[in-house]
Image (tube, rainbow, N blue to C red; front, side, top):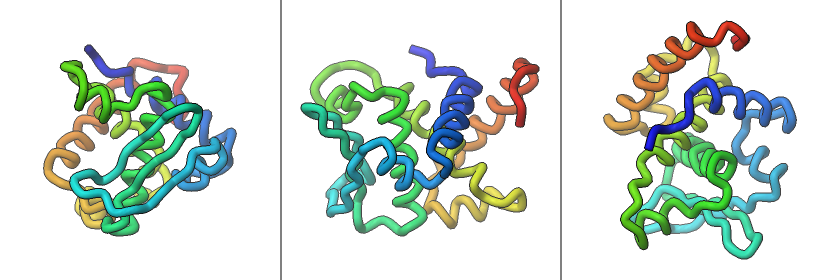
Length: 159
């Protein structure tokens, strides 16, 4: 399964930011009625939960502040792009491949967070601020490549 086009995710983020008036994932979650709970999580950085009309993002309290912010933005991506899917449950209890959901949530997080940063931000700075690993850096590079291609293909998109 192919993930949603980057330009579609960008437009979703832009509309949400305009509606809420903030790029802060914690402010957006609160505005949308999503609980953000920081607690010890053994093997996870975060998790999106939707159960019986309760919406929550769980964050590992052991993460740095910057990493918590990026993980919150990622989980918010799941909440917006895949609201009725508990991706961790899909992965654990089915044979469905969920990587496209993860890619979309990462793109959502990158779009939400990167526009917040000043234009002088470097990839090295992002790695340090968000404690990014090699796979995330590679995904970030792919994201930038897709953004460049998408904006060439979409004359209606206004940076």
